Image (cartoon, helix red, strand yellow):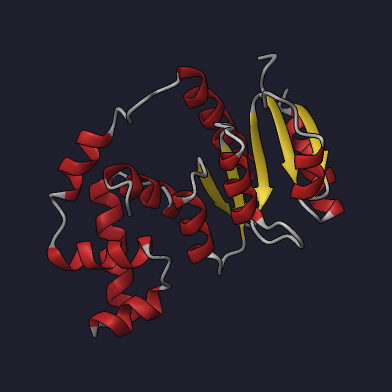
Length: 203
């Protein structure tokens, strides 16, 4: 567990402190940074564990942070925290290589579970995703309409916009969304988006 350092990057001091406390009680080593700029300034050659970052920050935001980490050759898993209305940003973060995204406000255990999963997957060092074939098989069971709703969700569109584009009601979009999440075995929107991106990394 020694390498399980969680680097928390958030410009909100209260969020930083509460996450630091939460993760310390879950037996993670925690390092806190007030900005992506501060993290990159102290950046070690090798980054252990994983990074938890807010998507909306002054200066370098979460998306640009992901790009800079990638540009510097770091393969560290990054979990992005987003506001409820930031689905488009979350999807963009996944496309930039984020390991996961979590919508605020989130349950403490959801964050801890995401961190453990990110660290475990990193330690396994999977070259090509082992679930890609299963995910594609599940995708093939979707109806045309469910596939259209999925495409909208992966594009980061809210239900109302998907409904307008497809000429159906937002309630119908919710039903299709629930059905396709069930068929895909997705426990959350981030899980669903992640699976769609694994099946088609070009997105």
